[in-house]
Amino acid sequence: MSDRFSFGASGRLVREEFLDLSSTSVLLDLGTYYRTGFKDLVIAVAFLNFGSPAGPKGNYESSDGSIRQYEKFSPPTTFHLGSSITIYENKMISCLGTVQLNHPVDNAENYLAGLRLTIYKTLSVSAAYNFGVPDMPFSFGLGLTTDKWGSGLRIDYAFKRHLYLDRIQQIQISYRF
Image: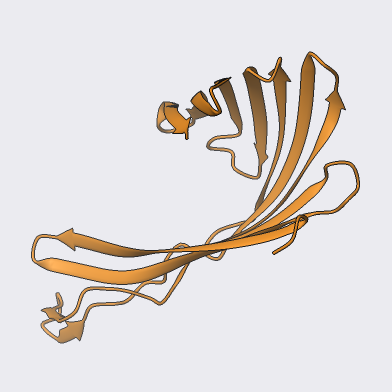
Protein backbone atom coordinates (compact mmCIF):
# COMPACT_ATOMS: atom_id res chain seq x y z
CA MET A 1 0.00 0.00 0.00
CA SER A 2 2.92 2.34 0.75
CA ASP A 3 6.65 2.14 1.38
CA ARG A 4 5.94 1.61 5.10
CA PHE A 5 2.79 -0.53 5.17
CA SER A 6 2.08 -3.82 3.40
CA PHE A 7 -0.45 -6.59 3.74
CA GLY A 8 -1.11 -9.94 2.19
CA ALA A 9 -3.55 -12.80 2.12
CA SER A 10 -3.42 -16.38 0.95
CA GLY A 11 -5.97 -19.13 0.85
CA ARG A 12 -5.88 -22.88 0.51
CA LEU A 13 -8.21 -25.78 0.12
CA VAL A 14 -7.57 -28.42 2.79
CA ARG A 15 -8.81 -31.97 2.37
CA GLU A 16 -8.33 -34.77 4.88
CA GLU A 17 -9.15 -38.41 4.20
CA PHE A 18 -9.13 -41.52 6.35
CA LEU A 19 -10.64 -44.77 5.06
CA ASP A 20 -14.07 -43.79 3.72
CA LEU A 21 -14.27 -40.49 5.68
CA SER A 22 -13.27 -37.14 4.21
CA SER A 23 -13.41 -33.50 5.22
CA THR A 24 -12.82 -30.41 3.08
CA SER A 25 -12.43 -26.79 4.18
CA VAL A 26 -11.08 -23.46 2.96
CA LEU A 27 -8.49 -21.69 5.16
CA LEU A 28 -7.15 -18.14 4.95
CA ASP A 29 -3.93 -16.55 6.17
CA LEU A 30 -3.92 -12.78 6.63
CA GLY A 31 -0.90 -10.67 7.49
CA THR A 32 0.42 -7.12 7.59
CA TYR A 33 3.58 -5.31 8.56
CA TYR A 34 4.42 -1.71 9.30
CA ARG A 35 7.81 -0.01 9.08
CA THR A 36 7.66 2.46 11.96
CA GLY A 37 10.29 4.92 10.71
CA PHE A 38 12.38 4.47 13.85
CA LYS A 39 15.61 2.98 12.47
CA ASP A 40 14.46 -0.26 10.79
CA LEU A 41 11.88 -1.26 13.44
CA VAL A 42 9.12 -3.38 11.90
CA ILE A 43 5.88 -4.49 13.58
CA ALA A 44 3.99 -7.39 12.01
CA VAL A 45 0.66 -9.12 12.62
CA ALA A 46 -0.55 -12.42 11.17
CA PHE A 47 -3.77 -14.39 11.51
CA LEU A 48 -3.22 -17.97 10.31
CA ASN A 49 -5.57 -20.87 9.54
CA PHE A 50 -8.76 -18.80 9.69
CA GLY A 51 -11.73 -20.83 8.49
CA SER A 52 -14.99 -22.50 9.37
CA PRO A 53 -15.20 -25.75 11.36
CA ALA A 54 -14.92 -28.91 9.27
CA GLY A 55 -15.62 -32.57 9.80
CA PRO A 56 -16.75 -35.68 7.94
CA LYS A 57 -20.28 -35.76 6.59
CA GLY A 58 -22.64 -38.51 7.56
CA ASN A 59 -23.60 -40.52 10.61
CA TYR A 60 -22.13 -43.32 12.68
CA GLU A 61 -23.39 -45.78 15.24
CA SER A 62 -21.99 -45.05 18.69
CA SER A 63 -21.07 -47.67 21.29
CA ASP A 64 -24.50 -47.31 22.98
CA GLY A 65 -26.27 -48.09 19.67
CA SER A 66 -27.52 -44.58 18.93
CA ILE A 67 -26.98 -42.93 15.54
CA ARG A 68 -24.90 -39.74 15.76
CA GLN A 69 -23.45 -37.19 13.36
CA TYR A 70 -19.71 -36.69 13.13
CA GLU A 71 -18.47 -33.65 15.03
CA LYS A 72 -16.94 -30.64 13.29
CA PHE A 73 -13.72 -29.13 14.58
CA SER A 74 -12.33 -25.64 14.19
CA PRO A 75 -8.99 -25.28 12.38
CA PRO A 76 -5.90 -24.51 14.53
CA THR A 77 -6.23 -20.73 14.18
CA THR A 78 -3.34 -18.66 15.56
CA PHE A 79 -2.68 -14.94 16.01
CA HIS A 80 0.92 -13.71 15.82
CA LEU A 81 2.31 -10.31 16.78
CA GLY A 82 5.99 -9.72 16.17
CA SER A 83 8.67 -7.09 15.87
CA SER A 84 12.27 -6.86 14.64
CA ILE A 85 15.07 -4.30 14.72
CA THR A 86 18.74 -4.26 13.80
CA ILE A 87 20.64 -4.11 17.08
CA TYR A 88 24.13 -3.60 15.61
CA GLU A 89 25.49 -3.15 12.11
CA ASN A 90 28.79 -2.36 10.42
CA LYS A 91 30.39 -3.28 7.05
CA MET A 92 31.19 -6.82 8.19
CA ILE A 93 28.37 -7.94 10.50
CA SER A 94 24.74 -7.24 11.24
CA CYS A 95 22.76 -8.38 14.29
CA LEU A 96 18.95 -8.52 14.11
CA GLY A 97 16.78 -8.96 17.22
CA THR A 98 13.22 -10.30 17.09
CA VAL A 99 10.34 -10.91 19.49
CA GLN A 100 7.02 -12.60 18.80
CA LEU A 101 3.78 -13.36 20.66
CA ASN A 102 1.87 -16.46 19.51
CA HIS A 103 -1.76 -16.82 20.56
CA PRO A 104 -3.34 -20.10 19.41
CA VAL A 105 -7.08 -20.26 20.01
CA ASP A 106 -6.84 -23.81 21.36
CA ASN A 107 -3.69 -23.60 23.49
CA ALA A 108 -1.67 -21.34 25.82
CA GLU A 109 0.12 -18.24 24.60
CA ASN A 110 3.86 -18.41 24.11
CA TYR A 111 6.60 -15.91 23.37
CA LEU A 112 9.74 -16.13 21.24
CA ALA A 113 12.94 -14.09 21.30
CA GLY A 114 15.63 -14.50 18.69
CA LEU A 115 18.89 -13.16 17.31
CA ARG A 116 20.36 -13.44 13.82
CA LEU A 117 24.00 -12.58 13.16
CA THR A 118 24.86 -12.04 9.47
CA ILE A 119 28.46 -11.92 8.27
CA TYR A 120 29.30 -10.14 4.99
CA LYS A 121 25.62 -10.42 3.94
CA THR A 122 26.34 -14.07 3.09
CA LEU A 123 26.49 -16.31 6.17
CA SER A 124 23.90 -16.05 8.93
CA VAL A 125 23.67 -17.75 12.31
CA SER A 126 20.36 -17.68 14.21
CA ALA A 127 19.22 -18.70 17.67
CA ALA A 128 15.81 -18.42 19.33
CA TYR A 129 14.24 -19.25 22.67
CA ASN A 130 10.54 -20.10 23.03
CA PHE A 131 9.10 -19.07 26.39
CA GLY A 132 6.06 -21.09 27.35
CA VAL A 133 6.70 -24.21 25.24
CA PRO A 134 8.75 -26.64 27.38
CA ASP A 135 8.66 -29.34 24.65
CA MET A 136 10.85 -27.34 22.28
CA PRO A 137 12.36 -24.24 23.93
CA PHE A 138 15.53 -23.66 21.87
CA SER A 139 16.25 -23.57 18.13
CA PHE A 140 19.35 -22.87 16.07
CA GLY A 141 19.89 -22.12 12.38
CA LEU A 142 22.46 -21.46 9.67
CA GLY A 143 21.95 -19.75 6.33
CA LEU A 144 24.02 -19.15 3.22
CA THR A 145 23.06 -16.56 0.59
CA THR A 146 24.67 -15.81 -2.77
CA ASP A 147 23.77 -12.88 -5.01
CA LYS A 148 25.07 -13.08 -8.55
CA TRP A 149 23.70 -11.70 -11.82
CA GLY A 150 20.72 -10.12 -10.08
CA SER A 151 19.45 -13.40 -8.62
CA GLY A 152 20.25 -15.37 -5.52
CA LEU A 153 20.52 -18.84 -4.10
CA ARG A 154 19.70 -19.33 -0.43
CA ILE A 155 20.26 -22.44 1.65
CA ASP A 156 18.91 -22.56 5.21
CA TYR A 157 19.28 -25.20 7.91
CA ALA A 158 17.38 -25.28 11.22
CA PHE A 159 17.82 -27.52 14.25
CA LYS A 160 15.39 -27.91 17.15
CA ARG A 161 15.55 -30.28 20.09
CA HIS A 162 12.10 -31.62 20.97
CA LEU A 163 11.30 -33.32 24.26
CA TYR A 164 9.35 -36.17 22.63
CA LEU A 165 10.47 -36.17 18.99
CA ASP A 166 14.22 -35.85 19.75
CA ARG A 167 15.98 -33.83 17.01
CA ILE A 168 14.05 -31.93 14.35
CA GLN A 169 16.11 -30.79 11.37
CA GLN A 170 14.89 -28.72 8.42
CA ILE A 171 16.60 -27.73 5.17
CA GLN A 172 15.28 -25.17 2.70
CA ILE A 173 16.76 -24.30 -0.68
CA SER A 174 15.39 -21.31 -2.59
CA TYR A 175 16.37 -19.38 -5.68
CA ARG A 176 15.33 -15.81 -6.43
CA PHE A 177 14.95 -14.80 -10.11
